Length: 300
Image (cartoon, rainbow, N blue to C red):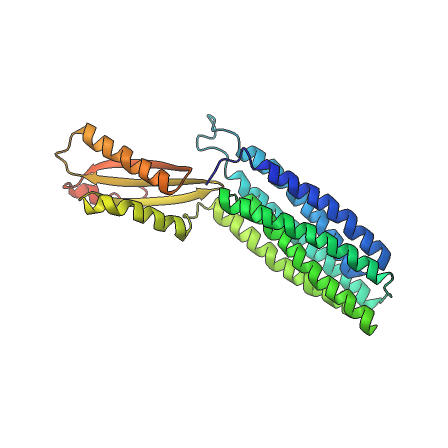
């Protein structure tokens, strides 16, 4: 978990990579006439649009809380993920349409060797940037960077398939291999689009923290439980790079307010240490009061 202030530099890196690959793959398609390479080039335009959206949403997510957004703007990242999924969906349909036309009207490929060499260079650019974005996304808990990385990796595997298909056409002379491969690529892209849109929807629906963080939370509370302190109504949600955790803390009713408050502060500090960047809210209750155990539902 981390603030988004420093994450926009990764979006700029993605934008630069998209522009570079558009130029490279566009040149490869122009020289070869391969519909597979054309599909690859079209997806790079989608990469650019997705990177621009990621930059916008990361900039918005980095803004501090205000009167209308008391919990901050970190959920903006999910819009980038969903938008990128929709762009991939449109690209897949465009690729499929172009592939069907080429399947019905075959066309010989030209300058295959040069085109493939250029496409390989473009793929290596995408691979390097995707790995950087994925590492940053995991380190900072950024949904937008993870989505952009997944998109770029889809582009990489797409390029691998296209390169193999164009090479096969050059070796066999079977022109139908090129559009068939483009259709397979379109199907794979649809699968990626579905995952990005699904993950974005899950984030907007206040999905709980991943199992890894929930395990850290339970490990943090265990020492306090062993000292007779109770916890319940534990709720978590993730909003972009921020984690929100609320829980009820049950202490002996004979404790003073000061002592109970100090314990709650310690519990919150321990949780933030285990889950950096988490926003923690505690609610104190007397351990002996039966009503303390009846307030687990949201309306209590």
